[in-house]
Amino acid sequence: MEQLTPTKLHRDAIRNALQAVRTRTLELFANLDFNTVCTQAHPDFSPVGWHLGHIAFTEGLWILEHLKGESPLYPQYRKLFAADILPKPERQNLPDMATILAYLHDIRSQVFAYLEIAPLEKQTRLWWWLLQHECQHSETMSLILQLQQLKTLPPYPITPSTTTREVIADMVKIPEGTFMMGSKVNPQDNARPRHWVDLDQYWLDRYPVTCGQYRKFIEAGGYQTRQWWSKEGWQWRQTHPVAHPLYWSESQEWDDHPVYGVNWYEAEAYANFVGKRLPTEAEWEKAARYHPHSEQATTYPWGEATPKPDHGNLNNQIGQTTPVNAYPEGKSHLGCYDLLGNVWEWTASWFSPYPDFESYPDRGYSEAYFDNQHRVLRGGSWATRPYAIESSWRNWYYPHLRQLFAGFRCAKSITT
Ligand code: AVJ
Ligand code: FE
Image 1 (cartoon, rainbow, N blue to C red):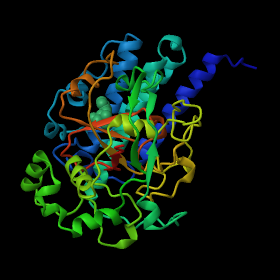
Image 2 (image 1 turned 180 degrees about the vertical axis):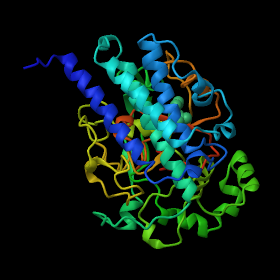
Image 3 (image 1 turned 60 degrees about the vertical axis):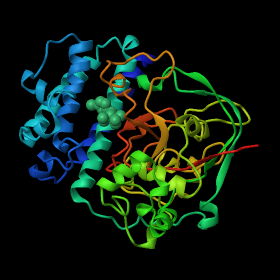
Image 4 (image 1 turned 180 degrees about the horizontal axis):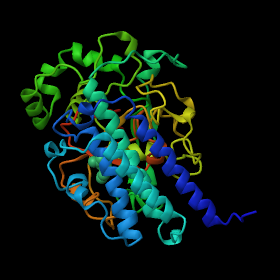
């Protein structure tokens, strides 16, 4: 029998994970007509079919060219599928679906052939980074598909474990003191390095803000009331005649689900309306991993176990939001729900480097976005793959974007 060395196990783990993620990626394309594949749903997003080609391109670039030392493959796709060459509207002129799929399959079989002999000891980070890259694009494809259909799905029939508005309005007290922020094992450059952060005590919402809560803001004329908005927020609001989130239903059936389809300005305005504020990302992260007894920061809110379906609304397992108290197994040590999964959460922080940041795999990945124009989101949504989720994970987007699976929760300082 073949001996199972640690490297063999590792090779198998990487291959299985890449394969599992690919299966889910391709599921998104079942029954899509080509017009949907190659048309932009929104100016800020590339066509969904472009993402598929870009996944293959990125795999070829980093594994076959960079690690294996192969000369550029498919030079005809270099310009089209690179992340930073063509403007998004010019990414609609795509090869047909069969051609994109053949490209994807050919790159993948070359990558798997190389994986058998690759010196993994030196390459682990890049392989896991690549896996997370496909995971991230898979979520973007999910939100593009939702945009293209722009429909509201019926609420998923989950009976929340507890359902009183009192519970949902609750806040959790996060104790003062230091915690270790960031990660030394997360492949993402922007999550490194680990560093100590000292915070005063503060309140954080136990749950993301729900549609029922947000409805009060709408009904109080929040979208028309200058006082709740910042200068930039009001500017956005005046140039965009909206009066509710992008994804919104009048039905009260959704009242226990998190609000989403709001941009950063809407989140900020709501927080002002209720006399709270958005948490900084450090405040969010401490609540999502700090254990008050061990005083350690865990990888996930619930500890170290890899995410399972019971931990949260992840991995497109349901395909839409769920009530904010539906996943008690995913609670943080301090008692916050739904930190990972369901909806991403806007934070008050600009996307910026941690002390001693080092770019990986290149400056275009994170460093190009340290421009004080992107806000950090934390936590992940129902469409986030479990390989691309942990308490240290940072996501970033322009504050005006409402096309994301993103909501928020609020914080409040404790003054003594
Ligand atoms: C972190 C989701 C904003 O998709 O634009 C993917 C991640 N970077 N390929 C994006 C990313 C390069 C990025 N986000
Ligand atoms: Fe990419």
